[in-house]
Amino acid sequence: MEIMDFANNVYLKDGIWFAKSNREISYPEKGNMNCYEIEKDSFWFKHRNNCIIEAVKTYSVNEIFFDIGGGNGYVARGLEENNIKSVLVEPGLWGALNAKKRGLKNVICSTFEDAGIKPHSCRAIGLFDVVEHIKDDRQFLKSINSILHDNGFVYITVPAYMTLWSEADDSAGHYRRYTLKKICSILKESGFEIEYASYIFSILPISIFIFRTIPSLLRPKKKLRNFNKSKQEHSQNKGILSSILDNIWNKEISCIKQKKKIPFGGSCLVVAKKTVVSSNLT
Image 1 (cartoon, rainbow, N blue to C red):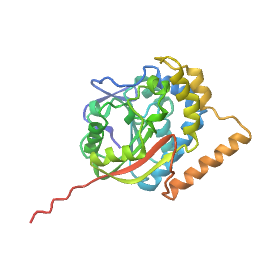
Image 2 (image 1 turned 60 degrees about the vertical axis):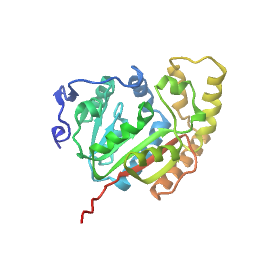
Image 3 (image 1 turned 180 degrees about the vertical axis):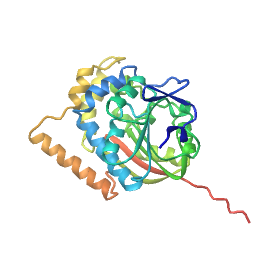
């Protein structure tokens, strides 16, 4: 696989592909470094990865997977470990460096627009907790559609329910949270048909509301969220509670394998296929 077959505005330096220029993104400067410290011990990142991998195995197991806005390469590394070739496209320098440290060979430090990803060149694209950072999500998804091959797939996770908004969303640079109906509607407007859509993290909405949303409503907004608090939230202690949670996560994975829908959760997971418009000229 040659990166230049897919992107025409990048150059190689020290094992990472760089765009000649990069636009501003709505993501904290230290976001990737903070996530890098959290990911390895996080039940949240681990379960999200497992959900993503099962979805990709169902629809795009033999395709080169473009993880756009993929941060430190946690998802891309998981895909590679499951024999799914991946390309990480991440505009943050620290994210790209961390991904290289994780052993990823195909890393592009850029937005997909600035990298010059070629139209109709990608058959599988992942946007994992990316779309909520984009001000104009519809136009962004239309742009994603343009670089997908006919019948190519896009895989998306986004945070669920505006009622769960908290200072964590402000600190992360989110513009919004979604319902499953809303993100599916936007995808359809952007030229996709929905193959699979479900909530994940079924038990998290109540805890998010109690421990994030309510405290955020009761105190003045803060620009930066305490890193240690985030790290504590992502850790999963051993014992009976851990076993219960693992059982719940395993049931969610089973639902995804069987293409069953989970009715509620802290995040949305959607698999959508590019709609091919046929011209029937007579």
